Image 1 (cartoon, rainbow, N blue to C red):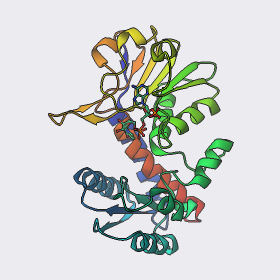
Image 2 (image 1 turned 120 degrees about the vertical axis):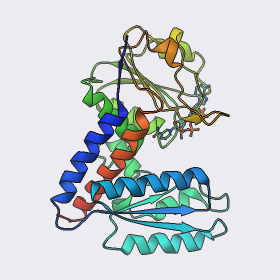
Image 3 (image 1 turned 45 degrees about the horizontal axis):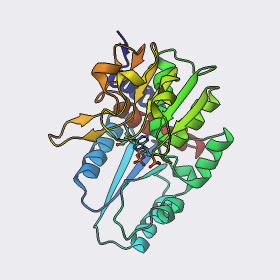
Image 4 (image 1 turned 90 degrees about the horizontal axis):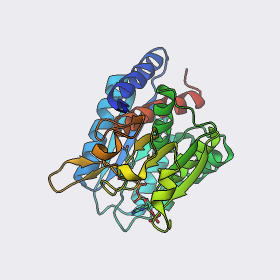
Length: 280
Ligand code: NAP
């Protein structure tokens, strides 16, 4: 029987730490959330972030631009937010409408306010092993490991998925923590063998149930980043929980695992950004 890693409890702990730190500051940390269009999922995420900020004493602003807004209009808003003294972190909710170039607008965010850690400057710092902020999801996974006393040092780690926002930064963070890391993707010839070798297995794919019990080593730590809504609206992870849980030593559930911790780490990143911008 695996230990179920409790994301809700860990998120509450991180949020309480942020709340206490923010309360002791004379100037409130501030987050601006920017949405373009009316994607319902993005609206739900943005509302959740606003609530999180309220709970933790972080000032927040929300901007919703119409889907037809031009790239120039979005850039204008981002430049204004870069100049704002009350805003320490800017979160641009993805995905963006197709006529807006994601790379161009993400690069327009001041790296000092890039609380998602997606700006090439911050990605470069992460690559150097010197990140000011790590992207929230992989940062949340590292916090999970720390919380449950799982040290990647000397461990074989497999990350399934190589996206810029999860897989790649995840692999870098595990390597920086002295794990020996294998990264898998759609062109990996023998996914099962790569997963079976792992002491720590992180699935960040978006294919419900891809990782099954026969792909997992006895006693492995299994972190499920995947979140896919099925036809019934149920959130499903990449890990087939019923077959994997009996083999794992630790496992994150979906929902209630990595998701809430990711949200909490965003708040921590806002606090860090505020401090590095001189707020005390
Ligand atoms: P993504 O950009 O679509 O990347 C998915 C990765 O998985 C790609 O590298 C892809 O390989 C790989 N992949 C797809 N099918 C595969 C297969 N059958 N075997 C091996 N590798 C496969 O997705 P993402 O943004 O990284 O997100 C991944 C998942 O995490 C999604 O479910 C997303 O919703 C979830 N997520 C959750 C949180 C959270 O807070 N819990 C945050 C972010 C993302 P190629 O590169 O070869 O295409």
